[in-house]
Length: 294
Length: 164
Image (cartoon, rainbow over all chains, first blue to last red; front, side):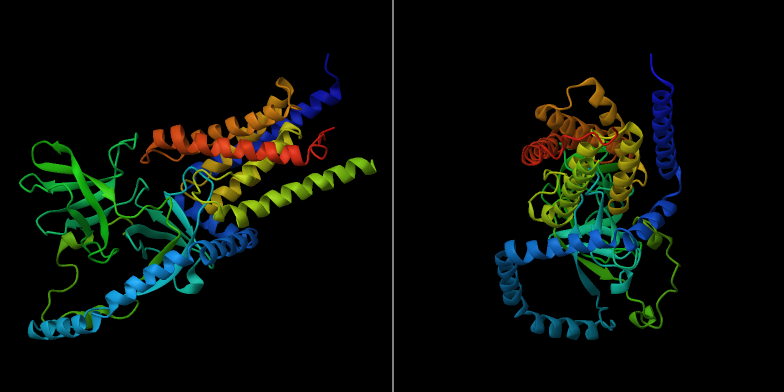
């Protein structure tokens, strides 16, 4: 027979458990914006020391283990960069011949990826840079191999990236050959055996051979044009005889990436990028379709 | 009384060490999907020596930390950690919790259940079978082995009942 104190003890445990469970359920059903705000507030206050500690850990790993790799990459980049001045000059001349304005430059911020132990790490990534460094919501994030995702929320010192593995991720894309365009989204196949991305909405008349690279198209205004998204590995299906869906092997892996670049959205006036007789912004309804986030 | 207080301080010291290992050493251990989850190991070792209510609160705090750092679906990790810690504390009464292998098995099974709950509550879209059949068991194994090492190294310090 249990004593009164033991019963009270058990009742207190049950109450504590139910309160914690209730708060967790409230967090689960609350709007996403609330969750992101609470997470950002926690990262900037009570969790700031551990985020700082992890960022130092990532830096130490980079400086010790990856120095040789980074040196090799830098050497390759330096070699390739030797041809850039002549290409820039040639591009400039061609743009002048075609009466095009100067190409807009994209500023970027290098960031460390602070991987977590959660099974959902890879859908969202925590970066070591935040609003204080100039990162804002909807800034695209890329790795040397290709597209990683887009900034979902930026707190003062850290930011959260929605990667291509997130169920809500979408990017407007086209093939490198230019013969097909569509939207890239995470695969609905839960086994993960057939590639993690799908190239959807490709017109039935357009066939894309295996091995074709798919790039971001720039439509939607979130991702710049030309970022590698993935490579076609085969046909995933056809819908009603008017659309083809292709499987994609992603260009970059969010689960193992250590460094990324955040492409900072230019805040200046974009009017100078267009010729005076260009069509007014918003006249093409397709320009706002495609990318996730906006 | 003094001895019990010293034991609690020693236990707190080990848990603090696990926190430091999680955030400073873990990034250097290779693939983050299979590296030991030091924070979860600390939670399970604490929960198995505490009352269910205190274990649930500890799980809530660890889960909230995980949610703040990986907000795929805010609340999912909090819920999963709370449930797993609470069950671990109750499970101590059912199993031989003083056995080192039982402790390690608790960590492994708890981590897999945690991942199952987090993935289920976060919605689909990611290859669930790959996570649950490959990465999660591997991480559970590495975490259990590390828990075993911690218990072997600090066996006397962990021979404590925090709810006593």
